[in-house]
Structure formats: C-alpha cells, structure tokens
Length: 161
Image (cartoon, rainbow, N blue to C red; front, side):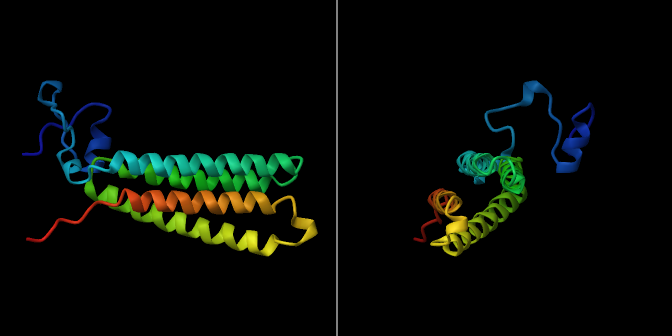
C-alpha cells in the first residue's frame, strides 16, 4: 500500500513515486531511501558552491570586459544552473535521483575543468587575451578543486570479510 496521495504536493510526490504521510508518521528519516546515501548533503553543497563560483566568475568576466562580453555571464549562469540542478537531484529523496545528480555533476565538472584548462592554455602568452588568462586559470583551478571535493565525498566501499 503506497499511502494516500492528495494535496498540492501530491502530484510532485506522485511523480517521484513517494508516498504522502501524515505529519505524525514522520520520523528522523523522511525518505528511507536516503539512508544509503548519507553524503547527499555535502555533495549537494559542493555542486551548488561550484555553480555559484562559476556564476561569480562569469559575472567578473563580463565586468572586466566593460559588459561587452556578456557571453561570460551567460555561460557562468548556465553552468551554475546545471550544477545547481544536479545538486538538487542529489537531495531529491531517491537513490536513483542521487546517482543521476552525482554522475551528471561529475561529468560537468570534468568538462568545465578541461574547457577552462584549454582556454587558459590557448590564451597564455597572447597579448589580446592577457586579461582573460588569470580568470581561466582560476576557473580551471576551482573546477579541479570541486572535482577533488566530490572525490573526497565518494562513499566508502563496504569492506569484505
């Protein structure tokens, strides 16, 4: 028996396959499925922090260009939003959503690290791109750091006896 499904949030719970429980039945773990992903909150924080970092870097890139390179802001906002969605998925209450959020987030972080590293390498020593080089280095470093933090929060495997 899946429980009653009603109310404004009922549709959202129905889409997620979650049962709607009365307040009296809520316990310390509102989503029993989350018991096997205890690192969901730290992973969500890393993804959200990386997203905000990219947004800030995009804003700074547009600002130093005199607001002529608005693509910097748009790319930072888009990358930040994508990482934010991945972070929300990790705390979505279902192991499947968690796995999707983590793995898509890792792929995005790997792509950002590679792209910003390539942009830094291409702009190194080019006088016309000298103003962007430090920003690309910082963005690459931040993306690599976020990827390392995701690795640090990787769940530990169960020891075999």
